[in-house]
Image (cartoon, rainbow, N blue to C red; front, side, top):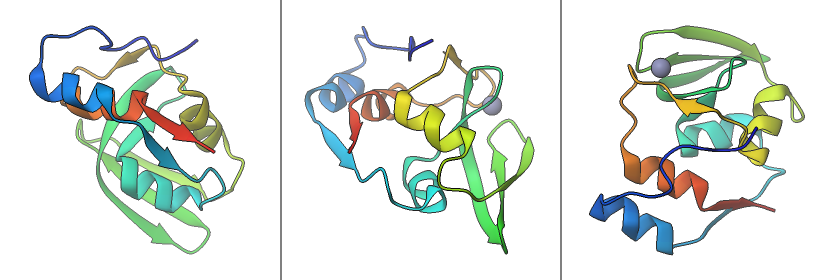
Length: 112
Ligand SMILES: [Zn+2]
């Protein structure tokens, strides 16, 4: 399962992002990574857009643009961190309406 969303597109902003490579340190805390990328890979393989994210002790609470509220334990090697790094997503959430350029940007982000 790899990121299958929006690689070919006529969207100009998305095309621009495809030419740039971005790096994110993979050992950064997951909270910081999510805060920056603003995308959440759900267990079912759907990529959601993050509307708000906050920290609550060892947990983080995030709200997606499709109004789902998710509370997850912060752990460096948690599922979400792994899925983000590996770009495991089947499709983007239609209700979140993630702009193409954002998906392109993420697709071109290397975790190292
Ligand atoms: Zn969504």
